[in-house]
Structure formats: structure tokens, C-alpha cells
Amino acid sequence: KHPASLEQCTLASDDREVLDLLTKGHMDHVVNRAIELGLDRVKAVKLASLNPARRFRLDHEIGCIAPGRRADILLCTSLSPLRVEEVYADGKLVAKSGELAARIPEFKHPSYALNTIKAKLPDPELIAVKAGIDRGACKARVIEVKEGEAYTRMLVKVLEVKAGLVQPSIEEDVLLATVVERHRASGSFSVGFVSGFRLERGAIASSIGHDSHNLTSVGADSASIHTALKAVAEMQGGLAVAEGSRVLARLQLKLAGLMSTDPPSKVADGLRRVLEAARQLGCEMDNPFMPLSFLPLPVIPEARLTDKGLVDARGLRIVPVVVEELPS
Image (cartoon, rainbow, N blue to C red; front, side):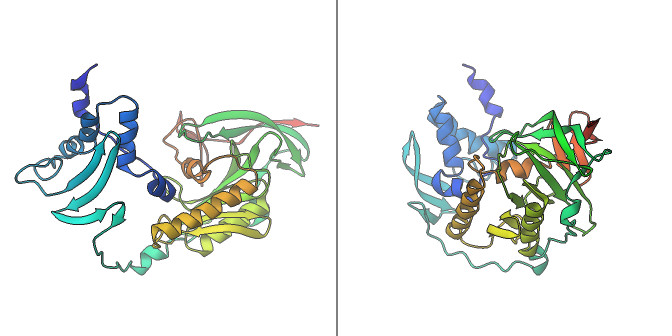
């Protein structure tokens, strides 16, 4: 309806994990989704090529096929849907029929980039929310997450108190959550509650936690959380699923604790294993590690958990987990 309004628009993918890349694609998938939603196919391609080049003032080098520009070219068998057959970079064939056609020399990563997890993990008994009463109940703040949404809600739920500790509730899908600082072994950590993962037992943990990328874990009990966190720390970053003292599955991401140095197919196999392990613990999400990675991001409303505490992102302030104690 308003074609001029698209001149300042671009398409982007944001987070894409390896299974998405291998089964759906990257920017080609984004372009195809735009076409499926009714955008003209030529305009969709433009939003992923020329418009971004103009946005970053690089259109004198890239963004279109023209004299003086780099010969970065896609040969497609179809534009609707977009099907890329060959990829050329600087005039050289680098990919054909979805397979790499260029020889890329192996890169030697510096040792400091492979040893970035410096975490002092809390003992299992410290992964808990303390109450000011020995038993009874309390009103507690709970972070509600939903798969496919970065936005979270701050809920208040009544939870049981036993031996001075606020208890998670599997029946109400209220799990323990913790974030542990991992860059300086400061020992800084916090504990809260989260809803939406629907784990019936065990825990999941990750070293991907935007944007500070500390260690983050969600679980039904503190022992499982500690086991999952320990597994992530021991392999210098990655994803882990644990139950009690057993690690059920793990995926190493040793490059800065964020990426793997293995081939994509091997990483995909590892990711499938950790996702299946999470499903065996009752999780119904397609990929619970994606919402887990956004749990510590305090700039997105409403509620987040950092190593400094529970954050009300609407007012950018740390708030207590326990709202009100209800002695028995």
C-alpha cells in the first residue's frame, strides 16, 4: 500500500541456531517468509540486499549487481520461493546446491577464546530462595516466559515455604532459576522463579545468556541445577541437561562459551540430543534454550533475572523475589 515506506526497511534474522540454518535456511528463509506473507518477491530480495547496503553506506561496494561493485552474486532457480543454486563471492564460486564449494583454511582460535568460563558455582543448598518464616506460604514474584516471545511477564504466585525456603511448584509450572557470573569467578549469583518451561524434573543450563552471557539454569530442584551448571562450566561453555547428579546430554560451545568449533552437522546432532533430553524431562518447548538465553536480558520488559537479582525491567530496578510472607 505504501511502497515508499519500504525504502528505509531491511530484513534481518536475529538469533538462528544450527538446526534452523540446516533445515530452514538463513536470510533465504526470511525472504521466503516475507514473500509468503504477501510482499512482492523483488522487493523482498531488495530488503535483504540493496537496502541493508544503503543503511550501512556500503552500496558503492555491495548490494546490487552493477559495474564497480563486488561480484557477490546469487544464481537462483526461482524467486518465488527463493531457491539459491550457486553463490559467488568476489566472483568466485563458494557454494553450490547447498554445499560449500570453496576451500577455507582451518582457523586456529587463540587459547583465551577457548577458556572463558571462570565461574565460582554456588553450592546446591544455596540455590534457593529464602523466606523470613520457617514454614507456611508466601507471595513470590515469578517470571513467565513463552516460546517465540522475547517479552516476559512478572507474575505473583503463592508458594509453599518449608524449612525457611520458598518451594518451587511443579504442579503450577513454577521452577527455580539461577544466573551465575562467569567472567571473573566473582561468585555473584541470584535465584528466582520462572514459569513456562514445564519441566517435571531435572534442569537445563546454558552459557548463552544475552547480553552478559553468564551461566543460566532453570530446574525443578537445586541439585539438578548444580549438576547442569557444573557440566557447562567443565566443558568451557555450552548447553546441558541434568537430573539429580546425572548429566543426560550436553553440547559443548567452547568458543567464548557461545559457539562451537565443530562442523554444523555435528553441532546439529548434539543439539538434537540436548533437546530430546529436555523433552524427556517434560519440557514441551521446541527449543527451551532459546527463551533461557533471553532470561537474563534486563533491557526487555517485564521481568528478568541477572546475577545481581530479579529485575523489574519496566523501571530498571532490582526487586525482591518474596513479596509477602504468609505464616501458617
